[in-house]
Length: 160
Image (cartoon, rainbow, N blue to C red; front, side):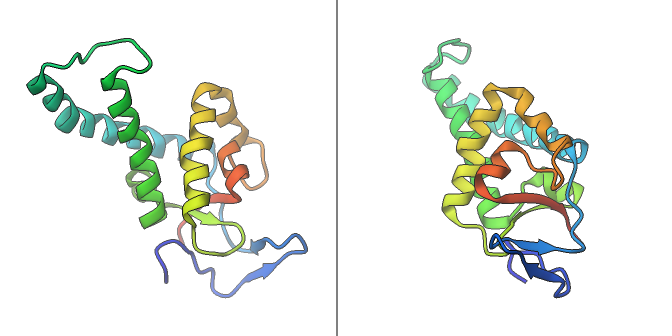
C-alpha cells in the first residue's frame, strides 16, 4: 500500500462525478481533527523553540517583533507551512494525525499530488487561519471536509 493512499478492501466505486466513493471509510470529524491539529501545533512550536529561536539569539535577531514581515514571523511561517506540506505529501498524515489514526486521502482515489497538497495545506490553511470559523465547516459537511479539503478534493479519514 502506498503511503498516500488507503485501500478499503476493494470496496471503492467511481461515482458519476469522477470521484471515488469509499463505502467503508470513516471520515474524521471536527474534534478528532482538532486534537490532531493541537498536537501538530505543539510539534511546530517545539521545532521553532529548538531550532529557530537559538539561531535568532545567536545572530542577535529580534525574536519578539510584531511586524507581519519580521524575520521571525517569516521563519516560523516557513516552519508551520513546511511541516504540514511535507508531512502530508510524504506520509499522507502529520504527527498529530498519526497519533490519532487519521490520514489525508484524495477523493478521486489517486495518490496525493504536489498541487493538491500545496493547495490544501498552504493556500487552504492560510485562508482558514485568517477566517477561523471556516474550520467549523468540518462539523456540518457529510464527508467532514474543511474548506481546504473542498478546494483540494481531499478528506481526512480514520485509518483501518
